[in-house]
Length: 322
Image (cartoon, one colour):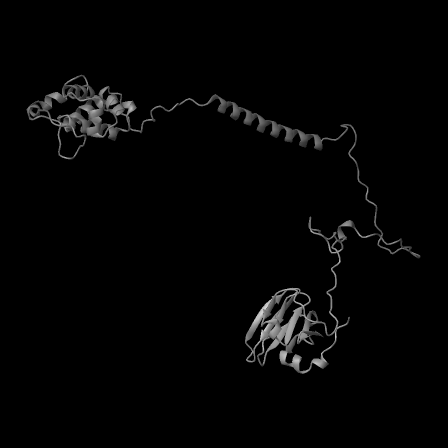
């Protein structure tokens, strides 16, 4: 029963028969070349190139080239020796004698790596055209530069004498008599200031419509909510502060901690709770309207004001201009 071909070398499997061992040395010398001996032994074993390739891990095209002794189609010499040794070992031949016969039959084998199979060695004819055209363009540029330089250095008329530059002597003596000065010259163009840059699509201040002045209620006018009211309920608060324009609004407690902080927009209000020691700090006191018991008393007197002072001295609060 012939052995099973598992396609692995070095795993302990051998494709040889015990009956073939006495004739292994004679089989190495069979055929005209060592490649022919390997082919005859492979065919005698009934193996194809693909089956031998699975066993030796050598490409089938390399095995065909080795059997035909086309060593120029194989890689470098060390690979060829390794291929012969692997094939001989897989087919039951003596590897050393097979390598020795290879060295006798092909002593001057290829020593360098063979070129890849299927690569076109011919150059593209269009590449030659491009290279030639590039050389012609470079030569034309060089010739044109040389011609321009020669023409500039050559005089307009060969027989005309060269132009002589006459320098007027400069006197070191000051002029005698009064000297009249002309009108001052205008400044050079480079020294003038550039026009201001205008962002495209952004209206200028002159093109914007005039903003209406905030309406100041008359003294004693009742409070009307025109925006959000923060803090306590408007009906339970004695002091209500309304922002006529956007202002920064911060309420501090008696211990200095921040009780309320917000950027009040136009119309928004803050109803002060009934807590002792509260004070308000605003960015623009003139734009904060004070309502005591829901009646208008005027703007805040200063940027920092105690809320208790607004209820204690309502009569002294400055009245707003109608």
